[in-house]
Every structure is written in C-alpha cells, then in structure tokens.
Image (cartoon, rainbow, N blue to C red):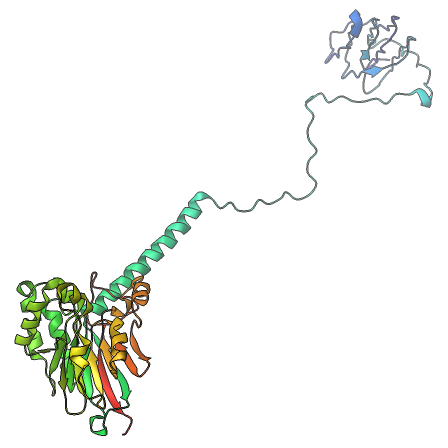
Length: 411
C-alpha cells in the first residue's frame, strides 16, 4: 500500500528515531521542516505528501509514528539538543505499525499553526459601529459668523437710512394739550406752534427751511415760538437758507429766543437777521398778550459773552395773577422758571436724544428729555426739534413741530 503522509516525532533528551521509505521522493508536492533547537538537525524527504504537521512530545523517551493514508503529517519539534528525522514510505511500502496509544491523562493538545499570517489580529467588534457626530468645522462657524455680521450690518444700515429719510422729509406735527390754572376762558384753545433745533446748515438748507415753514403754517397757529438753535453757521453763509422764515404766519406773531448754537454762529447778527425776517426776538424780555404773558430769556451759553439769561428783567415786575408762558432753549432753566412762578416753559435743545447713545447723554444733562412734565406749579414741555445736529439722522427720536393747545380750567 502507498502511504500518503508520514509523521515524525520530536525526541527530547538526545535520542533519535527514524522511519524511512525505500521509494524516491520525486513527486513530493510539499515538505515541512522540523525545527530542532539545541544544535541537532532533522530531515524529512517525503513522496507525494500533501502536508506535514508538527507534534511536540515532552519527556526524554524516543517515539515514532508512521500512519498510512493519514490526512496530515506533523513535523517533529526537538528540544534538548537531540535530532530526529522521518521519511514517508513510497507507494510499495508496508504501513508502519501504529504507536501505542497514549493515555488520555498525558495527551497534549495539538495546535494547527496559522500558515498565512503570523501577526495576531484584534477580534472583530460584535456590536454596531458607533456613529460619530457630524463635525462642526471651521467653515460652518465662519459661515454663521458672517451671516450674523451681515444681518447686523444690514439692520444698522437700514435703521440709519430710515432715520436719515425721516429727517430729510421734514418734521411731523405733534399735538399736545396743556391746561393752565390761570388761563381765562377766553383763551381756551389758544394754539402755539413750537419749533426748535432746526439747525440750518450745509445739509439742511433752504429747501428744508421751506418744509418747516409750510408745516407750521398748515397748523394755523395763533402764535409761533422758535426756541433756539435755528442755525449752524454765520448769517453770511446761511442767510439765504433762513429766508423762508419770512413766510411764517400767526395771528399773534412769531417769536424767537437764542439757543447755544446761535452763540457759536454769531448771536448778535442772527438776532438782527430774524428781526429783519419778521420774527420778534425776546432777549430777556416779556410781551403782555390779551390773555397771558409771553416771556423769553437768552440761552445760558450767552453768559460767556455777558449775554446770559436775566429772569428778573424778563419776569420780575409782572402781574403774577396772569398766566405766564416762558420761552427758554434749555430744559435746565426750569428751576429759575419755578422760582419766578412761570406756568409753562417751552424748550428744546435735547433733540429727544436724536440717536443712541445720545439719549443717555441727554437724560444725564437735562431734567426732561422730551415731552410734558410738571415741576411744582410749573409745567415744562420739551420738543424733540425739527432738524438734526451732526449726522442728519434720528433713531428712536423722530423730529417734530409741536402744536400746544392751551386749556382753561374755567372752560
């Protein structure tokens, strides 16, 4: 019988055993080598052997086994310095006698080496692979920041643009009713058009002045009060721009008091110019109208030029039984008005804050920023103004011309 495979045993301790076939090994497809540590050598020429497997035998006794028609053959591992060899028999050789069975207690487990890859591999994960969260890369953060910045810029441009449009189109009329305890019934409903802070200049010129005049005249007031800061420049530069003021019409006339900007632009010249245009300047002066007194004082800025407010001159000798309306540019002048028993003070100067952060500055410097408030027996009304100073824009403080309607408590 032909033996397809031969097993060789490794013999530790220095002894050797071999089984050799007589046939040549010309058709051998594969030969496995036995590793022999300790200096000994082993060889296993095999005819037509498909595979050789190695088996390790502990102990010091020799052992050999040759199996006919075995599917696998183990090459011998030799430890301790001995040599071993096994040769598969050729086709005519008789099967070798089987080795005595090894007791179960002394059997060693056989292992089949991995001949494809000696590198250990990690066990494959049994659960589902974790899903990584979608990364928020710098490009996304940059996109979001640009969108936010663009939206903020668009909102700012839109707000300023609308505020500028509001100034250039001209002020709107605001109507306010003010009751006065001393006002006689005959004066009930008396209307005063209050305009302040027109600020005529390079931007707000003659055309803007014409809009202001037309708006005032459309209210058909009984009296017009221009309470300072009419211009931002000299008569020489802005005289033509102020020319439309000559068209103001009111049954009891148009009156003017200086503001702080008149003293920056030549107050004396402007007082004469408005007088030429038909307005009546009240320089620390008073007029006794049929049903109440109308007084006016210079702006506090005139003190630097010796032309400051003089309340005694304007109010000192009047009949306190009559109602009194005072024209004074700055709201801070209300305290002197209270001392002199004024019933109503009409002011401007604050622009209502005009735009942020001017509202905080105006609130810190003035007792009232805009609107009607009471101080003891005296009421103070502050107009937001018709124009704008600096940038021709307003945010949150629209320009206005206020039509004050006096109300008698006896009516």
